[in-house]
Length: 401
Image (cartoon, rainbow, N blue to C red; front, side):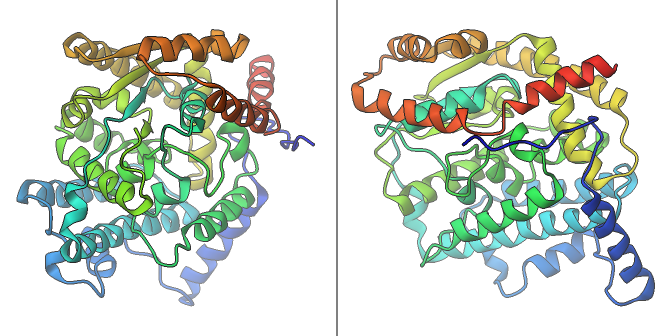
């Protein structure tokens, strides 16, 4: 039976639990029962690196990479403190996200110090899915990932990239999603999640403090401008190190990894420099539809963490963002001489099998019965999810407007 998404009456609707939690945190901080979480970069480094060696920050990384992370943390903390206008929930989230990024960075360095061979794991050329946010990249990614000839990143590994034995990351990822659904009952209508399900590598970018994960949650224009203007090479060097580590840990380095984050569209030239033999899939969708859906997603994320969210401001920013990503995508494609295939959002919705067969032909990949059956299972799973409710929510918002 299909799960039922709750009604979302307005783009800035939020669950009552968010307000109760904010009041509880504010009360506890005011009374001195619990200290408010610090957002000072040096204090965050001190707490996040507790229990690690100093060399765990630097092992496997160049001085440029280390400096990039430190500078990004400083700029991001400044923007969060001066621009984001976070409520108590947002401040707690910011503290948790940033300390986790620091902790993971040191933990990965510690792992590489013990296992330097992980950094040189040979991997098959990946398949990169690029396209605007809300342009069908998730469906394309999961159909490609369903093919047993390919590999993909689990949600839990994206946000917890340090390998574990025994591997408890699916349990921790499941608990994270359980709590997220309590605070945001519409989350699965915006993006269908599963702890061990194939998902985008957004967590790997967030761990290197790329702006993409944070600009969708907080109003931080100075940090976005700083990061957009900065060479993202250090971010993608860290991304590559994590990818090689993940492939070694899961034993799937010989299978092409299907990679997907909408941010790739903005940074595609640098990403392709790291993976020059990659096959590239570019999704296409009407820009106005993409914009409306993007605004809805970002508003849903921001309103949990701030009481001062401006829909017009979000729309203007994401109209700018879509144009920026399109320009950078076209620039990257003009210099890439590898395999590129385009896939249309509407055609994929009308006849996904025909569109995937065409896509495989353009990529020069075989598409057999086993892969098609796996894709049908993925489509059946998708049909039984909540994500279709988002189209109804968007229609309701439009009628109210």
